Length: 508
Image 1 (cartoon, helix red, strand yellow):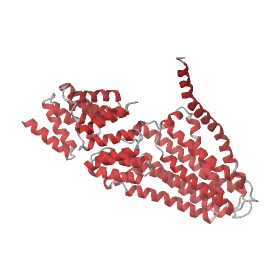
Image 2 (cartoon, rainbow, N blue to C red):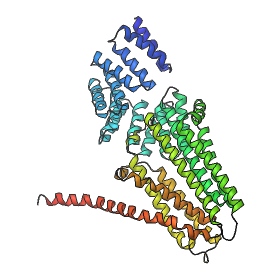
Image 3 (tube, rainbow, N blue to C red):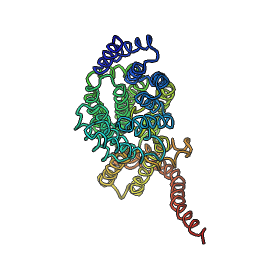
Image 4 (cartoon, rainbow, N blue to C red):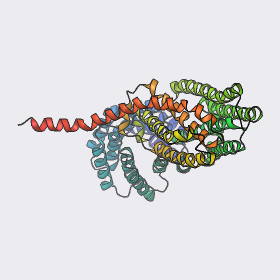
């Protein structure tokens, strides 16, 4: 009876979020009775809350060894195996739990979770969810897991419906709140995502995924701020023009506003932690220093341009080249620093989206494809401005601004659309594309976008005819890549027809 009382107190402590005290109490019972399956399962549940998946697996396997017919032990073992990405073993453990207790919804839910990450098993995962919902229609967890399955299958709208049903049954279901947050994050709405993560953190302060979500969102917000400060520095090359200072100020204000919005949406308990990241986390610190460096370089280039370059007439080549090259050198230095810091940090703790079923989709090929799409858009945007840029006698500043501003607006909308797209199977096609070539795609984007900005803000087109060689070289580099992609898509489109024809002709 004394042991049962201690296990009851440990369970109560776990339910109110006092995980460490619950684990210590349950571990004391295990020390006295090493084969107590309930105590071992309770220890495994505490370790699950603490995120120690390897030790959780060891505790669950001890529970299975103590009583192979205890269904809960097999479920906990399956959960630990899922988190450790041992999919086949997780499916086997979940199926054993279903075999031992076929009439319980918990086993079906665990089976669905195990099947999510297995190739070609999404239909069976969805079937397990339907079975769990049929067994317990008023429980929130089966609807939540059904949302995970739909989320992993790419059905964002259906996943949102399932998460919504889970929240109607349990308004404080932290998993459903995090699921909605991930949907918003994937859709390019980080502030809305953080609001859902904040609600999830308020419900479950012990959850380990909340910090990871906040880290990813703030990481993305910092990247945007770094980009806006670089473009502000680039625009200030033309600091001799009053309009350049207004454009640069707008870009910097946008970056600061975006970072401020993301910070406001953080859960209040996490805000001091995030502020500490700006000093202690190498990934965050290098981006803060890069943004500050771009601001300093931009101010220096803007002042030098205003003092040393004439507003009209021929430009002195020495100062002009020095001012134009300085932001590009700063970009190369910042990129090298960021890459070095990220590479070293990834060896110890990569930034991942914990709990997101889509993290199993390969990202490397998709990233290359997104860079290619943006590069292609930049090249296509350059084509209509080529003739006006090289014909200064026919197109004045107003005409060039009338041509360039709509192109920039369309390019920005297209870039937003591409960056919000969910990674898909087509990204696998770019897995083997040489990384050494794909890293040049962002350079091509910067060259084309920079020339478009130059095309719009320069009152005199003398520079445009000389600078056109840079985007023209980007176009020449793009042509063979586009030809490769067209041939690949053509072969991919024809291959199924050829196979089908071969099969149809075989019996004849």
